[in-house]
Length: 263
Length: 254
Image (cartoon, rainbow over all chains, first blue to last red):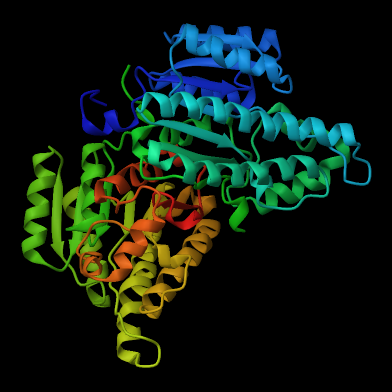
């Protein structure tokens, strides 16, 4: 595509600075690569340093300005410090993608207080805290901004398998709506991305553990597209929500699930 | 670095009903800017001519056909004409819509039928025609334009609201049925957008209510609907189907 055409400008992220939490693997890695592919500088905040090194190398290979900061999102001071480091090293943040999240496969009957707290802290509270930091920075500069909360179709459905995860994601969608209303006067758009079943480490259990083979069969049968999504298939959606192309869209859910939710 | 090629529509053919004004034209223009050949199917020939001029000025192949979507016999020939002139339709946008503002108590069945025929039945008939042609090619995108009244009740336009609510269910059902053929069917729910349809409301007190409820404090523009349509029409949304994208500046979440 001609880079001078209006449409390419619509989705272009050149000169923008993006943070992707959990951006070193799975969907987060695909998101980081997609944003970089559209021209953004990218900071990865994640725990696993080896995964971060791999992803950073991929980003640099594509000619992107990128850094990674070892961050445990359940460590509040460390998360705040990482945010400040990003702004110091790459510049003020224009795009925040709250993607880091994990699930504990225990029903309510078996879930401990610690399980619950850990999931809510990483999936929801860290998203709130980083959104607050990003929004303060964006509002002060008056140039607008984009926050993308990576929820899940689990935010819309009940589940007997990972209740704290589903609760954290439902909470995230409400966080999205509240932030969208509060930040609209500052031209900051906040939206949720709701991936369905994708081939990532997080879905290893249903794809590969024998005790879940029936669940796998049901899941595939229920998905109109008849397969899992590949992480790369999320790229367009995240660039859309991070770009000018979605400037009149805020507080919304973008479901990307091969039709699972509508069956 | 240029924007991702994943949003490029070069070599694609799009048909947009009601594409000569308002949201339809905003989408048609967006498609043209993304490189697609665009056909406008709409009634008003003067507006068709103007819109066609705009599209051609963007350097793409374009076509405008006079079509009243309630004329069932004219639908298949119109799509055939698009195919002859531009090639097989890869992207269909069911955007044409009308509203009759009369309360339920005074509502006539004729008004009801006309609204349902235009907004819903025509969308079904055109989508069926397009899908039949897309299936052997194993690829296609159908985008239905809903409304804020796909989601909410409307005190003066019950038939419009019913048609737009049904359009979302048509979207979901077609998405499920056509997924195995690699045809994605999605809906856009625009909020309050500047157009001929919303122009009359500006003289009513309701307009102030809408502005107060919209976080952006203004109506959206047709151009602001283009990004969502380009996304849904492109390879970027190949795993998105049955979804409803709400593009309303936050109106529906308040």
